[in-house]
Image (tube, rainbow, N blue to C red; front, side):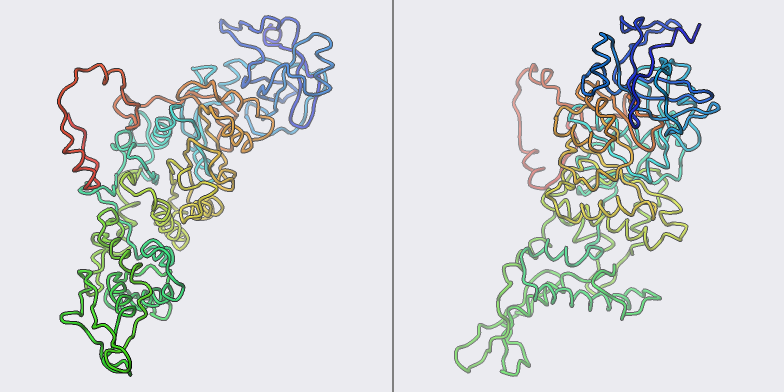
Length: 592
């Protein structure tokens, strides 16, 4: 009886992993009632099964009644309905596995997959899985993802503005580490790059939040001396000649060598110091020395004594440049020494060093070398702050970071993390022993095809090599068409929410197998918070309703309440606090 109840048609064509099923005449209504539940026949994304001996082949409907092949034309000539199905897995002895070991034959029966079958496939989450929501077609079936594959093979969460992307991201992260708000993975390491300051409200109870904003509870510091000097000097000075760039690097190396002794750094020979060695150096001293070299004049032709103006030696610590007597004409002193070629660039460098927007980088708190080159805290304490605290999640709130420098500064964070994963891979504190998932919000801003900054270079490196060292990436974006294809192609799991733009849908299609194109075509009609999930961490290509967050745990990304705001009575307004916040580059707390 059950055989007849679930029978939907027979296989009429087999091609690679794609088959065509000719529907039985009894399927004319398009709806079948089995065990009191309605099942729609031929709906894109629905599952079918084909019994073959002891095996059960499973597939997902990718298109219906679309005359694109010779086989379809034959079927249509008989005035019969058909569906195209992509084979995705099989069940042998009650165990479901991706991939198929044998193909169906022409004439094999195809059956509707009922809830009982789905429960067998999806089963109960094992120790390596976590539940993220419910199957859209059956709200009694939990959808789980494989945590190991999600992290090590990378993932992407893609969706247009308003599709529930931020809320779904927060829900998935919360689902990874908690079960009914109880932390189930106390040693998890998830680091979330929060570009707009949205996630503290959603995850603050299970996260430690660092912010670049002034007066934050946990200030975010990125010591400039951890950044590649080649990249840093471009940020500080803009366009500068290779000769002066080399001079800067040489001075940085000498400063780093001094820091070894000043800070009592053991087991590191000075001859091993390079420009990329993460050792502290006094950047103000380098600025002062470069200024000296560029503007100096001499009392003698032999360049023995500098011809300082009155009180002109300057002060590196307070960024007061040295001043010299102007060179005289002919053979009279003072004699010209510097070429005055980079004074403009050094003034720009000074303005950067004084700019409060960059204090988290250029005045990194206890990681700032004092006038003697000594630091209060070293890199081990920085990593302990970011990764070694008692919460499973770290949020780096970069909402006050200038957009023009986001790539360099974010790239520097990733550089610190990736280098520590390489050199610590055999240590207990390393990422191979305790892996790290890096969640990259608003990824299109710094991972675009046109971008060539440090952030993109580092994410590409993590995407290609991160698995070896225990770092996984989760790319979150509303514009997948703008993300570098190399990065997106390395994402083994795609979680696609509603995507309205055809170009963006095309990119998502290209990141998936060709046969699933029909499923991706349904992206514009997905409900808010609903996603199509395909890839290595998912058992099946699945249409899923992401779990709702607790009422007080939503990201701070809600739409403004236009109607409610505009219908209020107009009252006098004072913009003084707004201008003060603007001038101080400080986002204030919400007014009551």
